[in-house]
Image 1 (cartoon, rainbow, N blue to C red):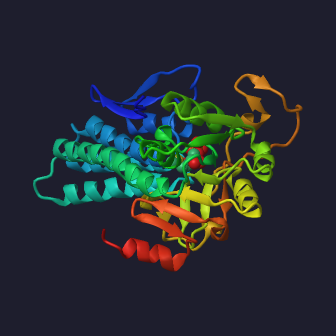
Image 2 (cartoon, rainbow, N blue to C red):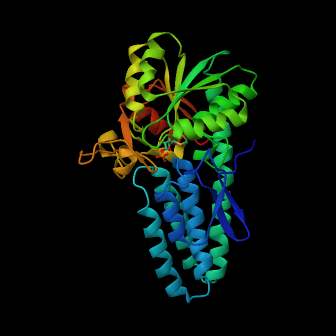
Image 3 (cartoon, rainbow, N blue to C red):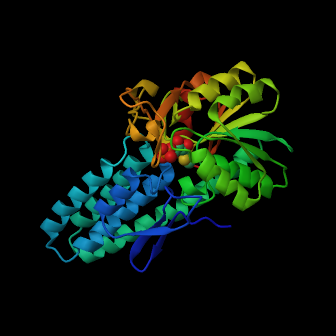
Length: 351
Ligand code: MRU
């Protein structure tokens, strides 16, 4: 099944509502920067690359909505749209990467003598479409490199959902599994449930079942036992932001998995498009970690199991130090034992 996380239909952006999967499969429709920003904040769409592409469409929708205004007002009001989108979620660098790319295009188009708002809006929409297509191509390239790392019959643990649902299609970590299967390898996936939002139980399990890739669901606290019992051959996860020294921010609980993998001599790979590497920050300590609402930890949906009055913390991401990362799987190849020099060299390469 081809999962179309985001699609353009009848001059609107449609996104799969990931909050209700797998019980329900439905698309919601978006027509402005404000509505897309809400969709990102409320987790209708989530996963770093998907958030970036959604934000690009948010800018394009806003430009289309404002195209009847004078050039000056158009630019001013579009800026407000950029700000709303930038405030939606703080950790995924792909959001800011996508907004920067759209802003550069907007500025260049506005500065051109012939620029009129309808023409600029059309260019911004074309750019959003291009980013959507590029994301799928990048995931496929990463998939080929990542698949080579997995042996036939590998049992691979993943955390959260870094699948087609977290991207424009194919996925980063789950893209590696899809590509390995396409290459004829037998792969089975162990999906961490991923408390508290259950992206593993709800989304990764659903994607792998649709794809007919064998998948086994475990609760997050079972990973150590599975590793010590020799039931895991490799770990592959996605990421929301990699610092210039190779430190990796990903869904809360990833750090725990990385420490366990290191203890058991299991390779720990991170599938990571170049747009997720933030060369402007020195290390993981500089990555902003989102704190999400307490209700996500107190219970799930309408069911509350925590004692009334208890204090709650809900950091949505953690940082895995570079020394625990066996390799970053990028669209340009695998960077083993990533560090600043290797990442700088990766960006200098022009293939
Ligand atoms: O809070 P989420 O669901 O947006 O978190 C998503 C993740 O942590 C993913 O692993 C990450 O964005 C990589 S997605 C290819």
